[in-house]
Every structure is written in structure tokens, then in C-alpha cells.
Image 1 (cartoon, rainbow, N blue to C red):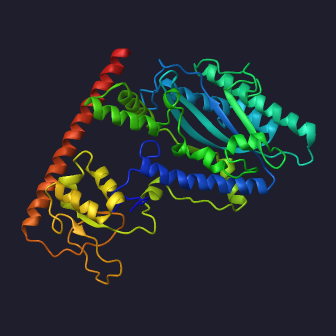
Image 2 (cartoon, rainbow, N blue to C red):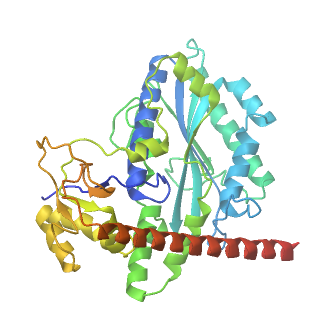
Image 3 (cartoon, helix red, strand yellow):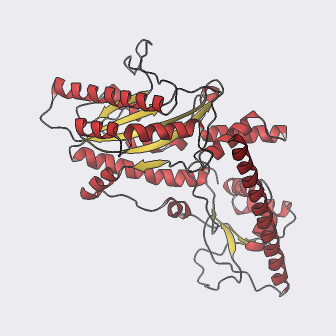
Amino acid sequence: MAGAAASFSGVQTCHSVHLCPVCMSKVLAVRASNVQLAADGLAAAGYVLALGTNTLRHFPRQPYGSLRDGQRGGLVALLHDAWKSAYGSAGRPWRRLRDSYGIVGYERAFEDTWGSESGFHLHWHVLWVLKVDPELTGDERRELFDRFRRAVAETWREAVLGAGGYEVSMKCDRPNCPCGGEGHGTDVRFIGSAEEGDTARYLYKDGDKGTAGIGMELTRSDFKDGRRWDRMSPLQLGDLAAEELLQLGQPGPLTEKYRERERGVYKVRKHYRSQSLNKLIKALEIEQDVRTEAEIAAEEGEGLRAVAVIPARTWYRHIAYHPGRRLALLKATEALGEDGVRVLIESWGLTWGQDVLSAPEEDSTDTEESTEPVAQELAAVPSQAEPEPIAVDSELEQTAAEFRRRRRALNAAREDEIADSMDRIRAAR
């Protein structure tokens, strides 16, 4: 089973692109493909592409913040407010940029990291799409691109200051720095047959020229690793927070930072494509996957082989509410397949063939369905179990009653949390 990957099927997915490694990888893979197809099609149609980054000056003392109603603030709110002021479709700065440089539209991606020395680092990655006169070549073309880069940077600087942030970096004296002395608050690098070499290698990491890899660069933040303690990706921070919680037995500073981010990404859109760019892509008939994030995350994939069937009563009573058991099942499946699952299940005091069932043969023609819903590993397959005694009904009723009791408790706790938040808001006024 070396190199095998395991997953659950027949269960509900969260489709979170910010927090869930499983759903994140599914959704971002589709988004990356969409961006790549769009970039290739737009370049072939003669449009000019540029990949940019818009950042904020940040310090460890600054909170991640939130976009929640009544609690808006922090770095995440500053990032969004500055973007709206700089490039919002109703604003004068955007109209000036659009008309002066032939901006057709853009695709924007949100990304964040955390460092022990620098705090949270929130920024945008942007794919700019421009319509440039094809007769404009040589020095005139490069001059236009330089003006565009400076205009985008200056517009961002003014917007960040207007939103209440620190002045972004506009100068740099580091020798041989890729910014060319223009600072790191905003970066714009053009891609195309006329702009090759160092820029393409910097963007795509593989040395290829043209648009190859632009989808990965813009969307696949789940593949990016930060620079250890200086700058960690969200998944790296989550791994360290889990390890810290396991070792200490209680939340530590890394756990608190992860929870701060977990709360802060609520309502943050991971990707956004301007309506004007969407219309252009449709007009050019560029193929795109239009499924929602929930539909993508729920896809179970092809080529998977079922190794076990877990009835709902076992799933909810012995696995779902026991921390670590779902992960242990996946690891056992990846390492030893059905044998690993069976040993693990029996170590929990469960009976193989009764509490957890063997997966049916793939070529089975039996179409009899189970009398109860099931949560399954690796593939959706109907249960082949014999009908159970009437006593099962009482067990299911007990499970359902326990579920309702927990839901009422969570709702009550949520009401108390909302009441406390409103009291703090009133007190602040």
C-alpha cells in the first residue's frame, strides 16, 4: 500500500478553501486549471498578462482581524478596504487606470502567512489582463509597462494610507533585488512572448516561458511552504499548533495564532474574477469548470477502491465524536489497506463484520441496499449486511437523541457567545 491515498466517501464535506486540507486541495486544483486555461486562451488572443502582488506593511502586534458584521477590523479588513478604494469598479482611481492602460479585467487570489518575527502577512496575488496596441513595440512598449507598474503601485500606496494602514514599501536599496529598487509594497511582472527570461523563471519556478504554470502560481497556496519561523503557510502553522496542543495538553501561542486566523478568514473570498474578465473569457469560448466549491469538494474521484463499509450507527457512536479516530482510520488504510482497518477497528473494542463490514466485491451484481445510511471509506458502495434485529431501531433513536442534545447545547452556547459579543460592543460605545 506504499504511496496509497485514502479518503472517506458518503460523508458530508465542508468545502472550506481556507482551513480544510482535503477540500482545499480539491477546490484549488480546479481553480488552478481554470486560471491556466484562461491565461493560455487570453495570451493566444493577443492580450497582455501581468502577475502582480499587493502587500501591507505589518508587525507582530497587529491582529489578523475580521470581516464579521460589527467586528470589522485588523489586517484582513485593511487589505479589503484598500483594494476596494484602489481598484473598486465604482472608484475614480480604477477608472483612471482602466482607461489609461487598457485594463480588461483581473483575477485576484487571497493569500496569508505567519511569522514569529513579522506576524501575519496578508496579501493579494493578481492576474492583470490588458489590451495593448500590437503596433506598440520596443522601447515604447516597455515604457508603457513601466508606467503601468508605477501607477498600480502608487494607487495601492494611496489606498492603504487612506484605509488607515502604514505606508507600503516604495523604495529598496538591496543590491540585485528583483524589485529593481521600486520597493515591495506592489509587484507587477509582465508575461508574454516579448517578456521572457528572468521574469518567467521567477514566476513559474520551472524555467518555462510563456503562460505555463500561471494557474499554479496564482491559486495553489496549499502547495507553498513558508520560510519556517520567519514565514509559515497556514497548513504549516496548523501542523505546529496541533503538535503543540498534543505536547502541552492545552492551547499555547501557536494554537492561539491558528485560532485567530481560523476566525479571521470567515467571509474572505479566496478567489475573485472581475465581471469584465468573465465576459471576455466567455466571449472567447475558453473552457472553464463552473462548479461551485461545494460541488467540487463533494466529488469522490475515480479509481478508488472501497476497503470497508461503516454503518451510520458505528460512525456516529464510535468514530465521529472521538478525536483522532478518523485520521487514524485514514493512516491505517494508507499503510495496510483492509487489514490495517480491521486491526484498528478491533483495537477499539468493535467487531469486524458486525460494527464495520467488509467492502463488497467490485464485480458484485447484488443491488440490495442497506436499511440505514452509511459512512464509507474510499468509495460509495451499498451495504451488503443482513437486516438487523428490531433493537437496532432503539439504538438509532438513541444516537439521534444524542445528536439533537449536542446540537441544542451548541446552539445555546452560540447564543451566549453572541450575547457576550453584543455586550462588549455596547460597552465600547
